[in-house]
Length: 67
Image (tube, rainbow, N blue to C red; front, side, top):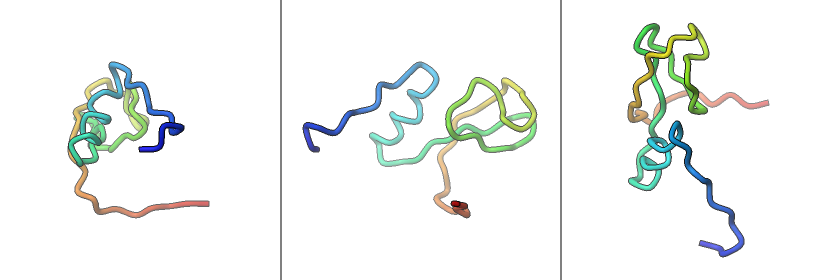
């Protein structure tokens, strides 16, 4: 790794994501109330505002939207 590349500083909230990156897996949050996947790590679901979020391993399948 380039010595000039800044590394992220994990927070308590984002630590599971960064630990997964170190292990070679992509972890995202999934809302236990509505099933919505949340990324960037948040304390509540961005769809229903539930605080019942669980970290899950991404399947690697999806659609990327960009603009």
